Length: 144
Image (cartoon, rainbow, N blue to C red):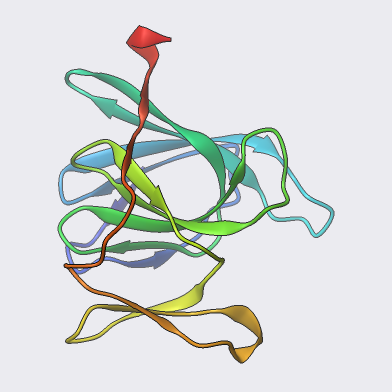
């Protein structure tokens, strides 16, 4: 189990299973597959007092970025594959997620919000607390 400091930060894992705790919220990663370039891809589960919640995407184990009160920025792909990479924000406290329009890297917290850079030097994205994200609930295993 990796205990993430309250200040957050970037973490990576290449274990078959790994757990993280950030500001009292826990998540579990379970190895699913490995694309040709060798990064591990995981399913993500949030164990909670009221149930176990699953992200309907898989996430790469590299560059997991914890920030804010209980957020995780990860690189997500549709479950069952390793293409179609997009950044996803997971709200660990509220068991919900939002898929961003592209894949972003090098997250940086600024006074204005979370600054994200696209590969190939495209225009960056600044996420603020008022950013209109399309939040979706994580899947509760009790209802599926």
